[in-house]
Length: 516
Image (tube, rainbow, N blue to C red):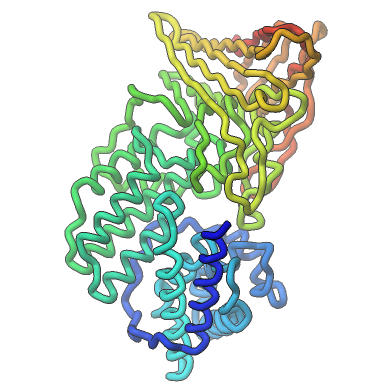
């Protein structure tokens, strides 16, 4: 509490100094400094808000406060695009420049700083001396606020965009040295796990991190700074993972807010690495487990949440799965959206995932805009293998605090046949007989036609490619409505639901998915 108070007071003093302009601008020429790599910009979202009156004052659409809309204006081009750019930049700055928190929190400052510089040549081309002076002041103002907050952040709280901003600032002022090189490496090490996966365990965020590292390499090259071999190797390893963490139809697995809005961009990142080979994960212990063979792919969420910032956006979908086979995705999670600039909270709920749910309650608490919103739970993962099967085993205690239940999921994957079997077990941590309602959900893709059999123990699934799969369960099953988010639009689809009530100490529900 005392630390927060001191931090608040120091920030207030800093803002007062900025108002009085105690610190003079250090840099005036931001021309020819566009190091942008791939564009992870949602132009559909920008079109949604950019034509509305006073859109710049809207705080609910967070993308506005990144200044991504400048790239849209650059596509319009000409005097109109430049005039609109300057108008909205200045309107935004007049309203928000001395705000304390949002939109000066997280990595919004770094995003605006970079977008202003990367669009500088475009805006500069038709601007008066007075306007250029104001833009330069605005950029320097962002630089000061960014550096003030950056120094007070832990490595785990710093995003890849902020790393790019730091490198560019220090290079601009000829201050980049071994200290900052080591700092960058420390940040990367804190946010990338043992298999070189970004700890958000969101493949889209992983791709954005790789893109930022490539951007940093470009900046270093421009300023004749040699990129460390270790960072080059990390980029290669992280890019290799991108080629592995995709379904048979080349879509991304939809865990922790991931969406498929930028698949072409991700493919470009993969294609730029020559002689790239997909990595085999031999020492996997935490994250999104993956099984692949010649015909099928299974992803399995066994992420261990932490107290750090990159766990803040994890979804409540422990032990959820996604399955694809024969070039088609079959079982999915509902996915993520960027319609408001952030993933809506309801898409983080356990019910939006293909997993086991107890008493219609989220496995973890889900909160927007708050750090530490996820209950720390213990997730364990193990794997076994024989000549015919690969067995993936995950457990979590996310329901232990409220309901004294432990959940376990075992996946038995036939290596030679298109057969996946599952055992979902609810284990009581005490000997009392308490009734527990459970739902096991399997969201299916919109292009699959499901039909339930008369005995209510099987679902026949017909795919677009006219393949037939049958889902079976040891308990009664039903078909219910669901949604699948595609290009920020929620499409109606179906979900297979196994539900029931158990009062036993240990209850195992068996199911299977088989091609016929």
